[in-house]
Image 1 (cartoon, one colour):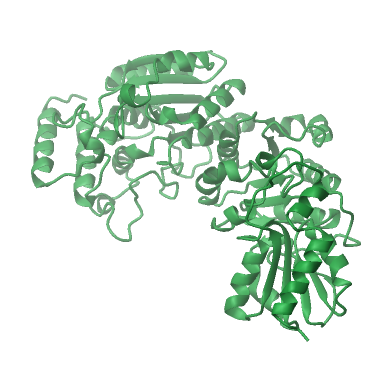
Image 2 (cartoon, chains in turn purple, green):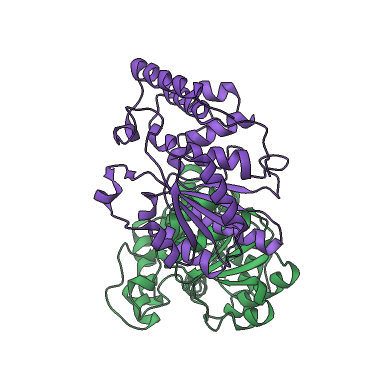
Length: 276
Length: 306
């Protein structure tokens, strides 16, 4: 099933994210950190990318939660679709990689960042694949904050009604949105129950446990369920760097020399313990 | 005109199975034949327009040619951002049909009326806007839309005003269509439902010319200037806010390329206040023959043509 030859080691991906955020002096670091393991497992073990970003038979990875785009850039860098220069020059004048997902970048499928767009486009892609009789899968990654948007719930109804069995939604449920915790801002209650009520086969798991993510994605993709599927991935916003974890400050904060070095040092330590 | 729309859609769907009709639970009788003949090419996306446009974008990305149908009060206004980000930014071949444009749904109130759709869409790069005036223009407009793999909005307004042309005209993006020739001081340029009235009105100004503007975006600068050059005053007519529609587009071009006084006839910058028949509301907004005549007389008094 594996499409890529790279390892997608999460500490390496986070280091790439840090380098981008530091060189571009950009925000949304914590939004990217929470979904690193989800993307690593998808790119390493599930996405069939075929001959490249425009292969008409490729699986689609829809980052509806465009704020996490640096995590996807880090994966595309591992994949070799983005160069070292792309990473170093991030968000500098006249460069192509933006601070939110932009479909013009090879490997990114949708324009997102205005929230609540990607899932509907993903549903259209899933329907198109079913109509063309291909085995393509659509993996759509949402934020839990993004689930405030009414268009998300429109798209869930549609996916369920039209039995889009090739659609797997993964909610990066890091528990925070821009101004505070999701519980404080707009309490969504149980997303698993809501997705189930909307006709999905849904479950909730630890979104940083790569083995469990892999096992669950495999189970849901292979399931004989007659509708779309969803994983509510419980994650930690800012995961991987102690002073960012669970602190919503790093939705908007930018790195300085000291915080950059401190964060890098923590990731170096983690890498020692990584086994393949 | 609605029959011409339906026939053109059916002919296109028969010729190309990639064409999918996606409706937001609208078009009750209009699509009976289509649903019966092409059930696999018919998708009712429910009363959920934001999702519908996103889905259409996804279908277009995977090789289909979606035709998204709704009332023009909802498409484009309710989903302007989806049209911008999901469709236009990627130049996807999605054809949007906005039905009942203007004040066609006169008794239903402002929620079902649409006099701002063209203005809102004109500022979106990539989208093209068609506004046919009769059944012949509709047939030509549908063919042009299907031949153009790009985002297109087709504005379908009051449809039972009769024919202006005697056969389907040759339609090109940006070009005006000749309706009545003349070298008098006035030229009338009308779009959609107002073309009929423009023809009647022009009879009262001997030598005046009448042109139809079915392609509101692009609007070709050279074509417009050559149409206006022989005349002293330009009168534009549209069932749309006077801000940002045909009159706005014409004035933008002429002010730079060939300055002439432009009398913009359209819905004043206001909502319909009261309920009534279509002709009642057209009167309320000053778009009946008597009101328009008075507006043109007042304008030519200010900008003498003699």
